[in-house]
Amino acid sequence: MSAILIIDTNIWAYYLDRNSAEHESVIADVEKALKSEQIAVNTVIIMELAHFLIKNLGPVDGGEKLGVFLRFPLIISDFDYRNALDSVEMLKRYSHLGVGGRDATILAMMSAAGVERIMTHDEALKKVDWLQVVDPVSR
Image 1 (cartoon, one colour):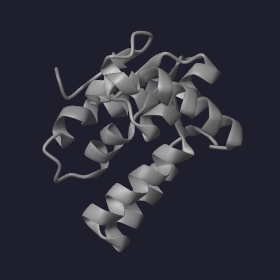
Image 2: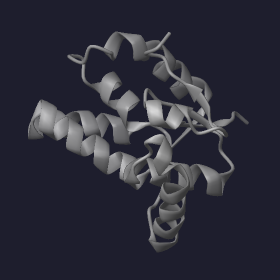
Image 3: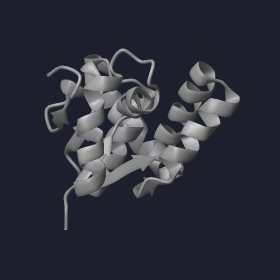
Image 4: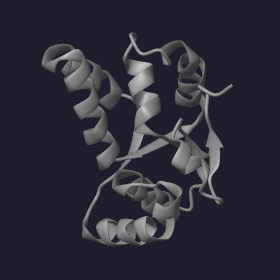
């Protein structure tokens, strides 16, 4: 069985928005991961991506792109009260690195699932010592 990889919102946004400057730099890595990895996201990533796509591409095109995303074979972690409490702990632990509330939800999900690998372009997450970060944009 393949390893689990978290793909952060910014990578999904670059992948789904052909007009983003980073689009071309993420295509190969995302498509390779979709074919060979188990990809996980949480419901906060879904909502953050929906916000980005609808705001930047409009309700019709953004909604269609979100539909494409939701058809990918993803492991989806719901965000509940326990996750909120764990996220607050991650925020307290890593806010000095620049980690904000949404990224804290990702760290809490990863910690709970024992996942250490994330594809992101987020500079704050790159500073979290236990993460193995893949950044296709910075190559």
